[in-house]
Image (tube, rainbow, N blue to C red; front, side, top):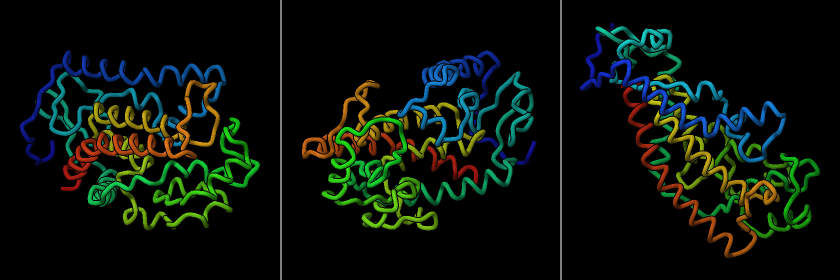
Amino acid sequence: MTGETLRSPVVLTGRQWRDRAAAHRDRVRAWTGPHRDRRRRGEPHPVWDFLFTYYSHRPAALERWDPGPDVLVEDGPEFLDRPGYVTDGPGARFDPAAAPERLRSTAAFVHRLLTATRSRAPRLGCFGLHEWAMVYRTDDPRHDVGLRLGAAGTDAVVESLRIGCSHFDAYRFFTPAAAPRNTLGPTRETQVDLEQPGCLHATMDLYKWAYKLAPATPSELVADCFALAADVRELDMRASPYDLAGHGFPPVRIETAEGRAEYVRAQSAFAERAAPLRERLIGLTERLTG
């Protein structure tokens, strides 16, 4: 055991932590189960695959349970095979002081990014145009799904509205014709300077930062971030140029004033929902870097 002193440790018996692990596994299998079924059938999904392909956390890893720091699990020798866990009396616990350097380094970056994001007011006027910019003036759209307005109609929407995408990992998929139309020029180097809490992709990325900090992250927090990412992804694609009605996703018609207002209301609600999750992740990074 390292010299770190536990902060009011919670002790979970073998039965208690196994019950929590089972509850977590049952919760996330609402997403991982259908994904596995589709994969076995060879059926791609234009909305949900993103959560398992763009985000690299495997379904089995998402289903695995970790308690987070300051929790001692009894009768759990398997935890000692995970980085950062130490023996403590009758059980095992995650000790931030024992975390590998790569995890502490990741935590330092995530802390800078999320505290910078927290410091800014949400910007709510992007209307999800990043997805439109990814198919602007191209014959090779990212998804094998038809465009609601056709190619010419889609291009006209892009040309009629201001694009202000602040998220590099969305901007980098803009077509060459669309990239110069963005009022910002996000890069990987300016990510900390530009990330803002109204951005749907920054909100979805809370899930990425949660699993990047595993096994330090309490799995309930990972699942909360995943659930938020799934809901945001649905809006992201409903507001996209793709015709997804056949998949059960009615469009948010951001080419209209009513659709843009609907988008902003949903975007604002997601920013509010994301704020406490961001705070929990910031607190975790402080435990890992303190």
